[in-house]
Length: 232
Image (cartoon, rainbow, N blue to C red; front, side):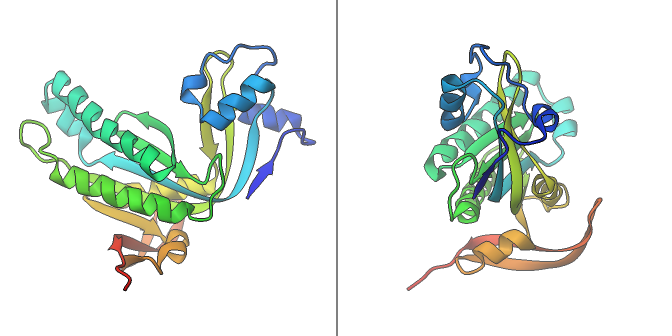
């Protein structure tokens, strides 16, 4: 469910989330989800929504800093371009939304800006395909690479940032926990929170990892996503 924050009684807070000046041309439409770009073109204004049911995914290459320092720069760029182009193709297949890439970090959300009841299942399917692709990838000069993938579900705020170049982003504790699932995850594994597990357990095979200490969050029950269940 989406909760609009446009026209709220806290305009200063809304402007902190979004900085869109009325009358500014939408030059950054290519980096916005199409529904948000259309909305901004039709009526340039603060765009900020609260979403109750969202799933967030982070993916990161294990040991990327060390690997990139030792490799030829062209090899690193070609590797990232090849892998993230493949990931981007999965975005359309599963109907989810890419938020950004920063270096080797890749972030995706499901259920934003268009709510969907199967937001967690969609990203679970995508995560498994991402992990399978990376596990089969030859890496740089036949040196294999590994990804950590982390997923969490919960409420977020989504909005547009920028005055000349617009970027759509999401914020909230659900995002922070998804990031922690990635950073506290295991190489070549999909690490999920209990919130995501509760949503997908009937359709996916998950292995309990037990309670682990999560930075800034304390002890949390987490799971490893293994695969889809075969029915019938």
